[in-house]
Length: 160
Image 1 (spheres, rainbow, N blue to C red):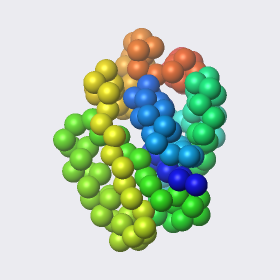
Image 2 (cartoon, helix red, strand yellow; image 1 turned 90 degrees about the horizontal axis):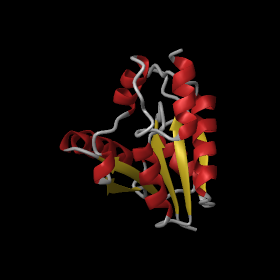
Image 3 (cartoon, rainbow, N blue to C red; image 1 turned 180 degrees about the horizontal axis):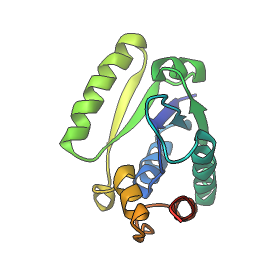
């Protein structure tokens, strides 16, 4: 079975993230959206809230080879635990590549069997980032073009 991870903090999960996940799911038997609980990153939403919102979003798509799991350890180790041989990463701009290139090197040193597969963002989502979405939502802006419906409700509640 060809298993891939799509890791991230996903705080919050955007339509750009969903686009990458749906496209990656067509290339693998199983895709695990791997939600990171990064101790040094302060998130707006808890790990459980992020997992639940992604599960609800994925369920609405009808795609059945995607699951969502949280993790707190190194990605290279989590990949071994899950039997995954590939990591999916989305790229929007050249600065994304610089960061991703470094991370791929570290992950390859820790887990040489792990391949990193980069998917370019769809043009409609190039400008979307979780940080920008949170900023717009915090100022009362409409984020419906950037996040799935359930995530929009979470943001509205968080910034009420």
